[in-house]
Image (tube, rainbow, N blue to C red; front, top):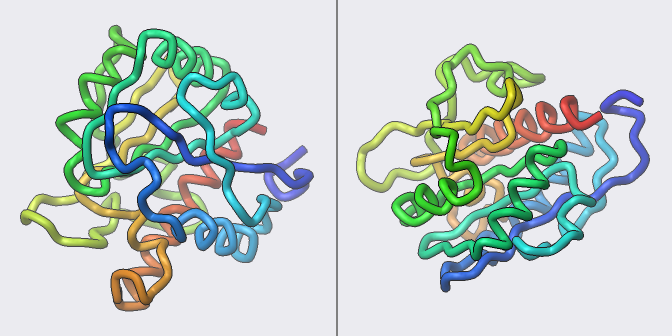
Length: 205
């Protein structure tokens, strides 16, 4: 089956320990799903599920989204579950909602101690799906003057994890009233999100 002929599937948001606000950006995924269903012809259920890092249910989802501002802790069993999920075909998109970076990096080492996060080049296919981003990730929210960066973990030649940093993509997907972003910024965020979904689904199916 191709990308556009799939039966309805679900995507999920990751619930993790450590006290960070895993539940942030409540309207983000429903808006991204609606955009993808409209613009890409995908058939994603309108509401995301919530899946815990240690749950075997994670294997039900081709795409899992993780966000937040603060602390993240994976237990050894959760790290092993996430590793199994990712090496068996899953895809994790981590969107730093500003403040997560110093916590998530050491936790990723629990999952893939042998891998390093690498910055993806601007010619990577994730930036060149239906929507073209020749300069990489768009900048949605400004915090400290740093450029947006897209990092990845690559396992046996496959991008299994995408980490969007210094951009706030998820905030850009939210209802306009929440952050009062200009519509052009929201569209940039949604288009980049659609590219991530498109890339993930192409690999999954």
